View 1 (cartoon, helix red, strand yellow):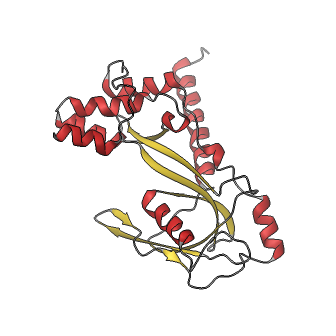
View 2 (cartoon, rainbow, N blue to C red):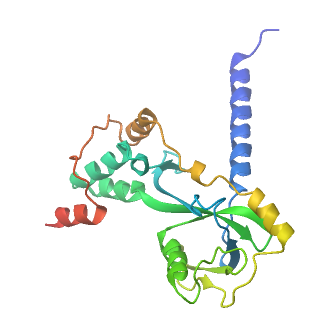
View 3 (cartoon, rainbow, N blue to C red):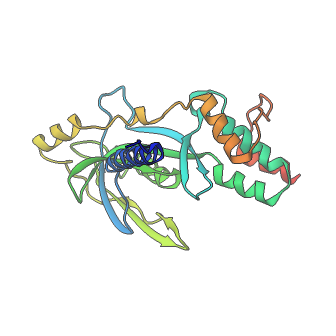
Length: 243
């Protein structure tokens, strides 16, 4: 009996996709899934005094033809040229509404990772948050009433209060608990600190050609560097567009 190569190809693709989905699910299980309402976490310090308790990146959210979103780390975080940033600014120059909509979608957005104990499960997971919630955490640490909320002996649990408004999450009411407390007993703390995730390793330096290919798939054209060497912020650039 002749082998049906098309059937084999289909089966191979099914296995590849299945493995990819499993790996993705396993990866996502490392992250705290913030539920609507109150989520209590204990943000942990870095592994040692030289390691910052958070890692910072910027993410481009790139849509595909099926409506799925792929997250691509901005290369500028590493001081490298980023084709997606070049595309972002080029799209604003065309004057077409569809290009402006795409620009808003792929705009690089700050993202912060930190290790935190999920008080619901007691596990150390990765807390991934945007700039608004991160500002609240930093503001609390600069407030003399709280100080270093990551301190294992005298720190504070943090209440992340998620409220959905028009399909968008709001975190305005998030704040530390009013009283400090030990993060846990000695055995718990030791186990947590031994199981910290490599949050700094999450800040991936994307391959330049791969990012260019992502841009080409979005637009159908080869993206050239569209900006001068002068670094212009989003606000400055939009102001120039409006002038």
